[in-house]
Length: 147
Image (cartoon, rainbow, N blue to C red; front, top):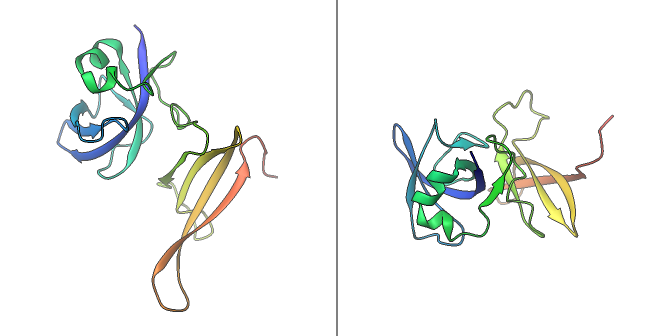
């Protein structure tokens, strides 16, 4: 069965579904299942971007997905973080749900710059002067293996 993958923004959740929109039609919301016929790169959370893989019949049912060129045919029913998000100058950060220790990043993700993919790590920090919070980032070429 042909599968399609693409990026979505999660607006809200119900017990069984996620209300989402595509980036090309952000005001045209629709519902996708949280489990079963949809596979998510990360558990869907309101206010976050995610990548979803759906079968062709479900894509055909949702007109927003048909008209979005970022939903492409893929060979797997499992999404990856890179699916449909590897556009030049773009990327994504995801909350590090498996954080173990204070030195581990609060967020992980990637970005594509000049055709090269970089891993991103982000730590939430408190400003010393004036209060407030900021996100400290580190980037490393994705093909480098840390020793």
